[in-house]
Image 1 (cartoon, rainbow, N blue to C red):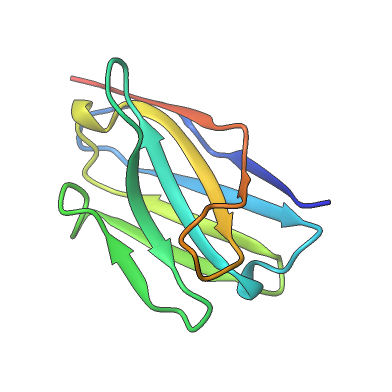
Image 2 (image 1 turned 30 degrees about the vertical axis):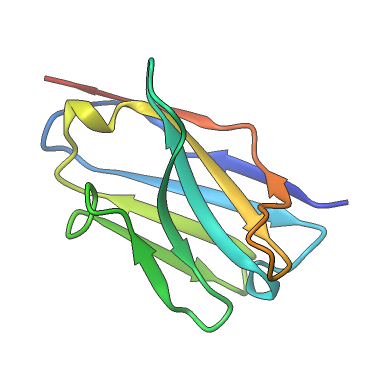
Length: 118
């Protein structure tokens, strides 16, 4: 059984930084595509960043240049380094894993709250 557990969220002032972690069990993070999503208050869920099996990365335009996704295979953990945070980044951040090629995200974490104050 695959479990994804996020941590690292919290309250930070605008301009600050946070690093989110997503620790996986039951599957290696290198065996699938790993992604970070977020859902802000009153907003739809948004794909923030992904990292492929080969390490190729994707970033939403809204976070490009500020966020960095990385993976530590030895610790079976994916990270999201978030710098220059803005109030608009306030959301629940979710980690997800995609195992197949259909685009379906197969496993999700419980989410971690990030709140950026102005």
